[in-house]
Length: 405
Image (cartoon, rainbow, N blue to C red; front, side, top):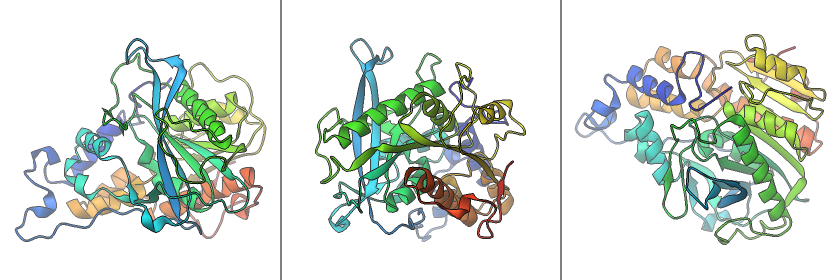
């Protein structure tokens, strides 16, 4: 069973892993640095923002935030009369984006809380921007948009896999990311900033995440039917209502979110295809039943060869299934870390060895291309019936990717 916090193989939480990375990469921990490391010398210009790779699809990307309240789930932590409250973000192909501002990687309040918690406070002014334009009108290239929902990992946040999310949106998908309250950093429209709660009674198990995903699917169905699910009934981008296809929905997630994706896919037939990014598959209650819909695993630290839970889940897959592993990948390799940490390493003068201790030995540029190509090929094949030979076997374009039998 995975509880909060998520513990990696080395016994470190994600928070501890990032903090240790900073301590290893800088001469002294950032908390003891009077100013940013790059500004110690007078006259040293501040570096530009950290950047994320530009998505490769043909469409510009739009984005909008929603506040969702699940009135079927009382929230005892929030108090009497309160219900499960979630922030969700919809990413989609857009048009006429020039008039709309580019969205940040994380909302400012949530970003500051996250960076403070992991010891990266000095990087707040350099946080990356996304390719998403907030509030831009929706572009419908043909039929309604296939939908994919995303679940983050323990003590992580919605923006952790922005590269993958905006890549899918640029290829014509609507992607809905969810912030799992009490196990994430997020910011609500009224200015409240939520941080992970160190309380074992908090609803932060994979099953709780899976319930969140299923509730988000309800919200997708409301949008598809022309109704606004936002609890505050805020204005939605032009064209969003009625643009989503509830008959073509998939899900993916990283780490605990990957396990939650598996739980939700097993429980909800609305999810036509599921993808786990190195999910431990430690489920509570225990895994029961088989899955006859397509499921793909991108393994790194949690492989079927080393983890009985992952092997047990694989044995319950009766439909199309695939398990790939990028050689040199570690648990955080299938996400934005591969693009951001090499830039952070340059800022703080990390050695190549210190960087590899954080993101593994997989080439970062190759890692980014892998996370752009393989999820897109998977959802294209199983939600849009666009066959990709990329999933047939090893590809010379991605020599690090191994197909696990």
